[in-house]
Length: 114
Image 1 (cartoon, rainbow, N blue to C red):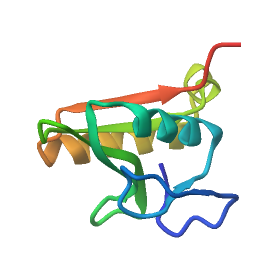
Image 2 (image 1 turned 90 degrees about the horizontal axis):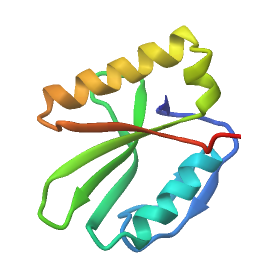
Image 3 (image 1 turned 45 degrees about the horizontal axis):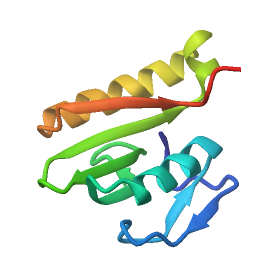
């Protein structure tokens, strides 16, 4: 999750399944966007989907071919093994928000173990 008007380093990608320019703020986000682009079960996805009434965005809001949606948040493994309070709070906020909006499939994408 990132702030809505995040000003950090960004990789911009034009992907056919993403309705706007996909702005990736981490390597994990970039690699996962490429994976979604080639996944035949994915109809479309939104990168950095804004959470209403929050100052943050969700990394990926994905729509399957059958019309169901799911959410994925990209987090570095080190932020989960040595948890930072803000990271945990933001993940909990995202999960609660999407559950309240009837998106039951919510998950985390991490980088590979070293």
